[in-house]
Length: 264
Image (cartoon, rainbow, N blue to C red):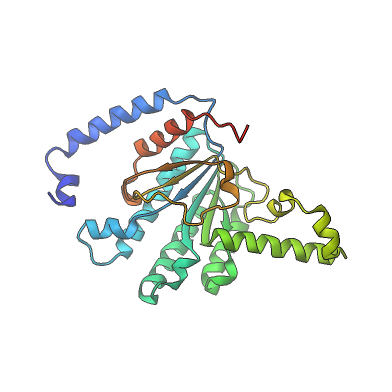
């Protein structure tokens, strides 16, 4: 049975009705006092989704994945999430062939512009200096246009790598202290984790309570390496374009069922 038949066959309406009933049931069972403040999402599986649909242009998958983002943000708002971080492009992705990377960057630019136009509080997190000037400008413009927007903060991780973020944080810290006349020896005597945390891309935000990855891969691939020390992980089998509200609710339910001891 092909993917297209599974999605549009005679039983699709019945299946969708059952999903909606189950969705409401899961939503009603969620404890309102144990919702993650910050959710990070690795939007994985766009290319595999396109291939599973019999499509040769993988950018069709990237566009379908981009269309899913708005739904996720509304689900997060409904649930009471305060911050969501979306990993849209890694530093490793920048090495993809231009035939794929250039259209992907355009999709990301259009997505970020739409998020800003829709009134979300957009904050870029990543090494903007690694990106093409046009892409970096779009990200900066979205941040400047929405910095005062209320509600959900949407971190768009573009040109993001966890190791690069830590290196950038240390570099920023050293430059800051050098500007104050602090010697390396003096800094070494007082340096602690908070000094580095204050220079991360996500400084001032709570660390992610829950990290979700779609497409069945069970690894973080460097996503929020520093911030995820006490995060809960949820790995979902579906490819990102097929991610449904019920999948999101299941992730929240799994999170709520865990006892977080933070090492104590």
